[in-house]
Image 1 (cartoon, rainbow over the protein chains, first blue to last red):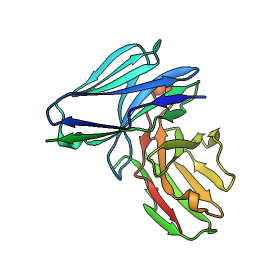
Image 2: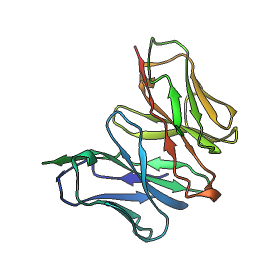
Image 3: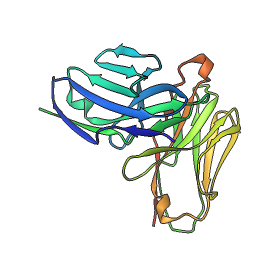
Image 4: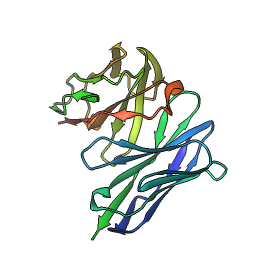
Length: 110
Length: 115
């Protein structure tokens, strides 16, 4: 089976940097995705890692260590609109099946 | 607009009824999915079709039956609705793995409430 862990909630200050961690246990690892979901809306794709290292996309970066079963999403220069749930999802096997973590609810405060 | 669309957005019904949710994507993707997101916001795959062929079928009661008339449409029919079926159902689509990293694009969701 698969196991994906993320913190349930985090709070950060506008303008700051926050790191959201995700640990996973899976067989046949084939990529890790981060999605953002605002309340009452659909998840939207943020980032993808399949090799070890850091992927940077504007204010958002995502890191992967396959040997440690560990990823993080780094959000810089936080804005109020970044308040949302952040979902870590692992793909395994040859298909495109994603297993999602329970999500981290991020609250950005003034 | 290019997107994944679902109808209806809200669905309120009585226990025991049968209902359908429709999904369409105009992104030209080969693969479509149905997810269920429960009250704790846990998003779980139910089904996936690739070019009208069922490729993922998780442990879902057989009251749930997906149907894909063509690769742009994936509908979900639910028989004999139960209280525990209340959730938000998301449709998603993705391109073939060979064409991209295979990220999934989600529809706006259908909030189903069973009374």
